[in-house]
Length: 321
Image (tube, rainbow, N blue to C red):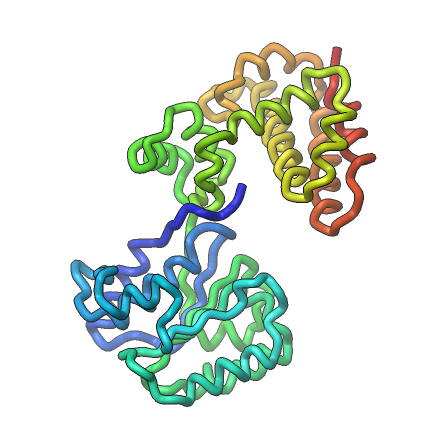
């Protein structure tokens, strides 16, 4: 699944509104939480808030010149780094620091957003420290991370930490039904498979995720042969990774249904009868070995290794007459 659905934390934006209005806004914050939970979206929402010309009800108006420019990525005083997923090098930080020292062109508060700050190199982190220790009065630095332990301790200690939490699957399911007008079964699958992070769900998922995930299950679990299908998916890294995720969720569900967990707790709720029909074909040891193989194959995909053989082995273990 990919990121298309925008999500930000209203609760955290409201907290920033209180800080801003009371003059208690710190100079640097570190947003901590799972991937795709809305940290970056919230950072941009905060950038709009502190520069909005007509903030209403503790939220930016989204209509003034400042909000529109930030939404379009065209505001001269709002700068973002680390959005390409590459290591954030010292030259990137030096570029940022040069802008910190400049006067704002038009903003009340210059905002610098560093996404995935765990990707800061050691040299870049050390270069950032001086600004975190001696901030300018009209600058706000917002860092995000999903791997707090990989952020330099001296950087962490100079930021106020803000924690982000995924929605509970029941709450997210209700939101998908109400706000996104999705049906019960697809909302259930998306809510439970996304682990409560709306940002993991794309508009395309609303259209055909059931087709994609059911084909994976049918090919690997219910078809005697999947050689041509495996050849097809190994050509595309994203497709192979997604197929492995669907399989991981399936066999995780299989372990749960063998324990007589209510079907409402299953990710593949729509295929609970299929899970029940095959549960006796697999021992817990079988399921554990398949899950381990899926995890290993997923790492191989991420490291750009050829996964045709691992997928074939998973298929052999997954197929039971």
